Amino acid sequence: MKEEKLPTGLVQVYTGNGKGKTSAAFGLALRAIGRGLKVYIIQFIKGGFDYGELYAIKELPNLKLEAFGHGRFITEKPPREDDIKSAKEALDLAREVIKKGEFDIVILDEINVALTLELVKIQEVVDLVKEKPEHVEMVLTGRNAPKEIVEVADLVTEMREIKHPFKKGIPPRRGIEY
Image 1 (cartoon, rainbow, N blue to C red):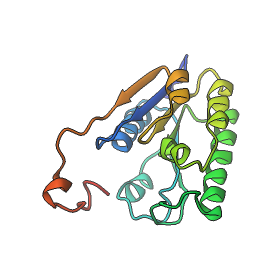
Image 2: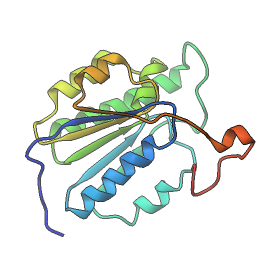
Image 3: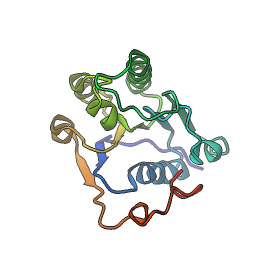
Image 4: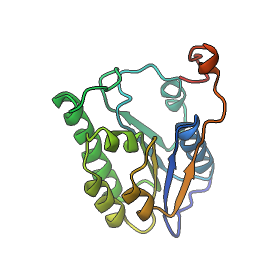
């Protein structure tokens, strides 16, 4: 694999109520490592869950993943202190990884959900986008991307649910939804 660098790193947002935001980000990661790029994935609020991608990641070169969270859905408003602390740790890691510039692509998976739940502040993420090194590509996933995030992004894709098997009572399937 030839190592390449991105001449210009952009900011991508995958949002919307449809399925496929994380899957799109992981597809991009797979394409990138196939071209010799280095990818770091930081998952907000997904730590402790048993997602299939966690098993496959171990086998891939130039790809690192850290998952934060407590293995449960966050429903409390305001959120619990341990959820806020976990999201802050994820954001601190993101800031460190992005500013070092050693990884070509940094994916902040479910960051938009963390913003919606007020686990991290929107301005902190906007500032991080503005301070990133020129060659670093950032990908921010999750439902309900705040308008401030949409405004600083270069590409925004909205996944829109048209039809979903959950509505027929089909539960999440191992290897497909998780």
